[in-house]
Length: 319
Image (cartoon, rainbow, N blue to C red; front, side, top):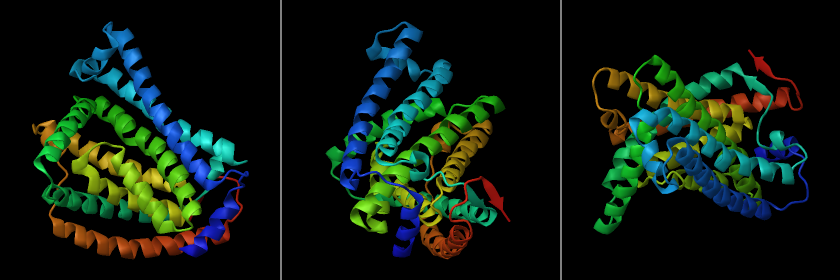
């Protein structure tokens, strides 16, 4: 992995802002903008529904207000995740979008391999969801975790309610595409890159970012699956140096879940049951073995792409 640091450094022209300072600024902006995004979301909802701002959250959980909930959640996600990364990139780099990983060369082979990586990641996450349930924890902690999970699921149940194909397409954008773009810009394009350079260790940067990525979702019962997903996404971005590929994988992962919910609810299954992603633990063992093979091919393919097009400035889809 260390050889990739040299390639990555040539892609970004940094200003004299230390990586530790970048990380501290990123966390500070993330915290402030998370609060501002939530307040703005509540304020707009209170004005639209003509209720006190403290009751706005309850209004957004009502099925009849699902479209407004989707719109405001997308707005809040953009403010909370995209803006911190963009601000830090603007301050610390003369080429902010390049520093965030918006690489202009994509290999068709990379895309195909990302499809298989996504499949492996789904099996791994599903098996870890079952493992997460088995971890012994104090009863008081589990009670609090289940309360937070109920709040999280209530919001997701509202967002994932799809009565027709039009709702399905809109949900793909709101739950699938928008979070994929905004979260990958923050976590892989900004945070992971900063941590890798700061600690001079790809694994520390990837794993630490994956833990924060999982924790910020506020779901204990999804902790291990999201850490695994974060690591897989981190490896996709690290090997390819192309944020579009990690965005693609993140979107595909979300799209599979949305499609599963839509299909199963159309067959009469409750949304809450359709959201259950648990799989047998042995699926995860097979997934890890498969991912190791696929990532080896992905690494080799990415090396070839970077060697053949080190300074290409136009979008290109290679054979």
